[in-house]
Length: 169
Image 1 (cartoon, helix red, strand yellow):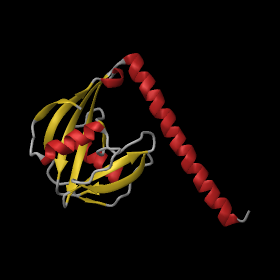
Image 2 (cartoon, rainbow, N blue to C red):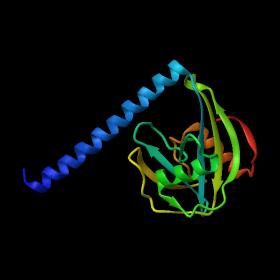
Image 3 (cartoon, helix red, strand yellow):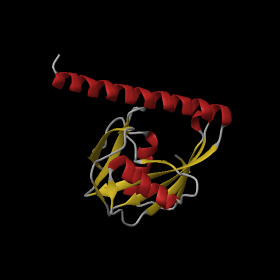
Image 4 (cartoon, rainbow, N blue to C red):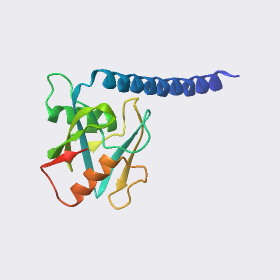
């Protein structure tokens, strides 16, 4: 095995280990949630460009989702949405964030609350952190089959022009 093939093998091995580590961390998180049942708050951002939605696929979950994640201590919802968009899709120069709604998720023993925003004025590099397996822009009328149900509902609400919503994620 020459140096170049060793390097390629090592890079593939690192990616596999990284993905496995994210899956284990996600499982540990799920166990913690079931045991402690904390109240959590998160954000999701519907990034729309030319009638396409920018979606992400995680390394630790199946399906396509809106970029987003948890709100950190001493962080506003808006700042969390901008940070998550930057981390997960490399979004920058994110313009106005319009609140689509605030939703709840009590599934999987959670008490989760999610603020969903829409942004139509942004630029992105496609660079992302290690938890993201893939980024893709899908036409709003041709979304992927394995779209998460909550993501599908948020996109449908956006397409109907509905804002200021509450309900289940």
